[in-house]
Amino acid sequence: MKKRLIFSFALLVLLLIVFIAVSITAGSVNIPPEELLRIFAGNPENETASAIVLKIRVPRTLAAAILGGALALSGYMLQTYFHNPIAGPFVLGISSGARLTVALALIASAGGALRMNSAVMVISAFAGALISMLAVLLMSSRIKSMSLLVVCGVMIGYICTAITDIVVNFADDSDIVNLHDWAIGTFSGMKSDGLAACSIVVFAALAAVFMLSKPIDAYRLGEGYAVDMGVNIKAVRIAMIVLSSLLSGCVAAFAGPVSFVGIAVPFLVKMLLGTARPIFMIPASFLGGGVFCIVSDIIARTVIAPSELGISTVTAVLGAPVVLVIMLRKNKENA
Image 1 (cartoon, rainbow, N blue to C red):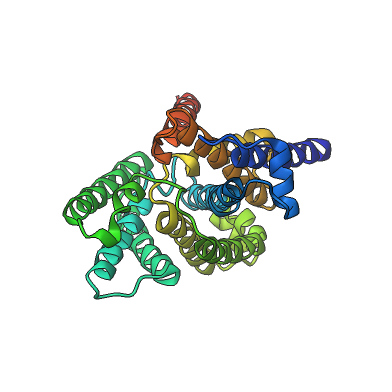
Image 2 (image 1 turned 90 degrees about the horizontal axis):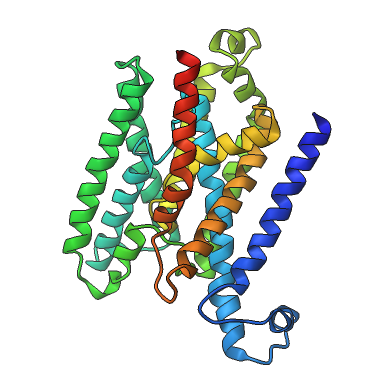
């Protein structure tokens, strides 16, 4: 088991490094590796290439890695909370709720009613994610069937998406010209200040989740066991709700909706590790989410270059088959 864990983490780190390098070099403008080395050494020969790499590709790649990790981690906590492998921020409508409140905040800022910055985006997204999460929890207290609860979550997502689409269609102000692109999901346009803001939020939440790894481990083994181990079930539940909402909300604030990452990545990582223990799953899910989203972003901006696909389109193509496998396996187990 120890050798498998070492191999798994080494593989995830290696894949992350390789795809970060590929992401920085790939694009409609070809930048040779030797020029890339000169750019990072601080003596570029081509200033245009330097600007493309440092101001566009590096922030975008790092955003994909960080936000992808946040989304996978949020999905892992939701799956642990509901004891179901198909519970995720996108499926349960949490990402859509965050997307709606961010869109409303952007409209308010364009109209002069609100001053938009990274803090306002994160707070508004967190509020939307938390409201959607509370709606799902309210239904879960009345609905015992997890499959029906997932359907209700999907309905919440559709409602929030419909309202957001209406808002986007009526938002023709020049200050929010990129709102439509954001509404379909993208890592493009990430600036250094936005990257710094999302990094602070995500890594702080990651540290908090990691500190909860032992209580979460007890919780996943059953509430009765957790109580016997002295775990405060109510406090752990609240922490998981807040942290998962914060992580998924942060993703929605800076990248818009990104589908299936929160379900597919924890499942794949669990298969890779051969264990579901949170102390291993938490960092591995974060690394795996980063790899998954960087690969998806590379595909999104290269397959029809110079145009781009929405990031959620690519993650759906890559992640939906995994979700189907999960459902088929779960159905076989219940048969």
